[in-house]
Amino acid sequence: MRGCLSRPNLRQISSSIGLSRYTSEQCPNIAPEVPSQEKLTMPACTHADSIQGVTPSAQGCEECLAMGDRWVHLRICQSCGHVGCCDSSKNKHATKHFRATAHPIVKSFERGEDWRWCYVDQTFV
Ligand SMILES: [Zn+2]
Ligand SMILES: [Zn+2]
Ligand SMILES: [Zn+2]
Image (cartoon, rainbow, N blue to C red; front, side, top):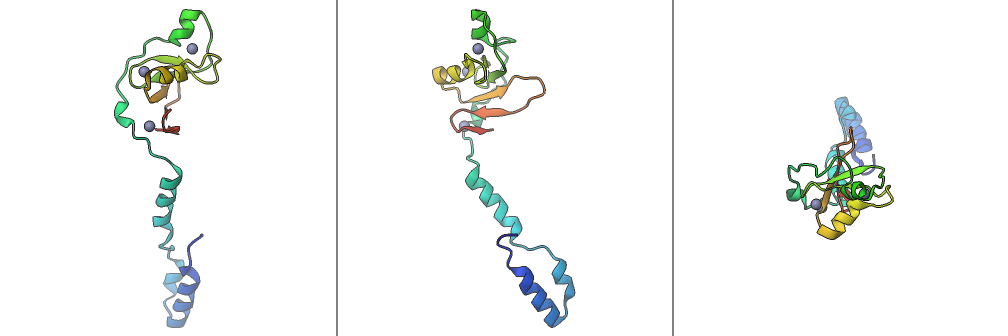
């Protein structure tokens, strides 16, 4: 409702000139305001072209499997297919892979999850 200043004015106009249908019309200011505010709060990711049709390098975290260690959740690198463990896991191999390679985007490798994360922009892609 913020920024909608026309409703009281319209009601005044309609009662004075007898056009009552204008009182039920939507405020025309609402629609253009919402997208411009979202752009300010949501930084856009510029790395979408680094997303490749990758093949998973393993069915678990590569490094944890090699160490015989465990992980919590898995992330798959969208540049090379490296599978690494998330930041809830003690080894954080997905983040270490980003630091080592600068591959910006990982996708969840968890069943039922479908989101991507850009490490550079710190935003969902
Ligand atoms: Zn990005
Ligand atoms: Zn790991
Ligand atoms: Zn990678």
